[in-house]
Image 1 (cartoon, helix red, strand yellow):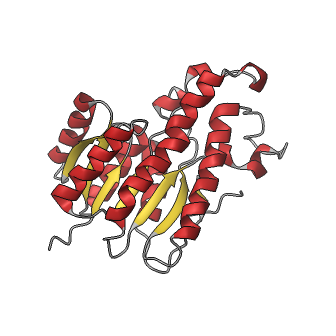
Image 2: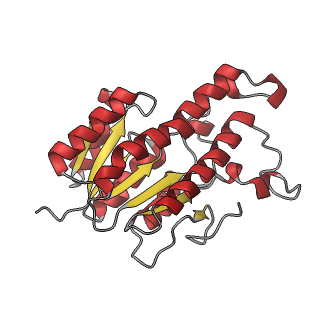
Image 3: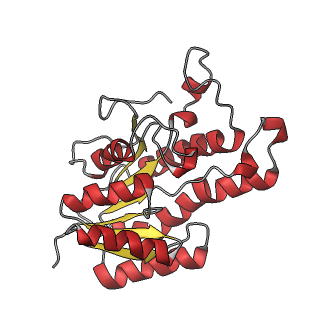
Length: 247
């Protein structure tokens, strides 16, 4: 039986997802580079493979049921289980920017399809594989902008960012994560939220003050928890690794 841990990271062809794959791969895991675009996914896997990491591209569009199910079947056939699932794929489309009263329903739906419904679809498809792991770990990538505490605190640096679609999608993701953590509390699977912090990625036109590596480190911390680690936690985003984020 292969004891090498298997990790799937969605949206892993660039940014925080790619750095998460790199850090997990450096720890000896087989990393599955989940991406919609085969060319970009294969290229990312090749880069990591060139660094000595066992990285393999898995095509997955988190908004497509057939794509998600096909990815789960492939992982089952090739590996028989999954040890780590990182739901990293996330978007903030231009169509969903602007004041709440001007946010289009189309932009809102597009945001939720990836940031919320996609996470549920992938998690449900991968759970049978995660249950076969001696210590499955699910890490959902959230944001301070999903914190109702920070968004309603006038002294918070996040208070001015009144993005209806993105913010509410991350708040919804937080609630989704709690629901899974409660359901799986009596199993070997732990489900947590990683807050990478404001990292320089394509999502924000590379305007963040933290690096993707710093953000990925928060994800990896939760992906490699021991059995005494938290379940249903929301943490990260600061120079103090693992720092709790207020709900």
